[in-house]
Amino acid sequence: MPLSSHATITELLRVLAYPKFGLTEEEIQILLSAYLPYSEVVAVKDRLLPHLPRCSDKADQMFLVLAAIADAEVLVTGDGALLGLAGQTPFAIETPARFKTRFS
Image (cartoon, rainbow, N blue to C red; front, side):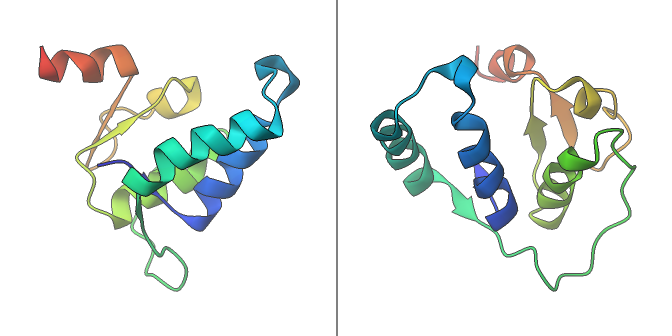
């Protein structure tokens, strides 16, 4: 099940509005309505933060924290800064293509 937090949902909203995606407000709402009901929202605030490596992109640290607090098995990402931390966390960090092979 996908995981999210207040911070990651806020980031998702910000990223979906990037001009390179060319999404209208209505299209963004459609995407969110197709994703958020299937996402488990995890309360990260006021939790003891686990010991994790520092991501070179500070804005991506929230994804490591979310995965650790929720005891995720895998963090699926295409972000190079996060992928560079593979093997340094209690959960796997994989590309979508690698993650897909778990089901083939």
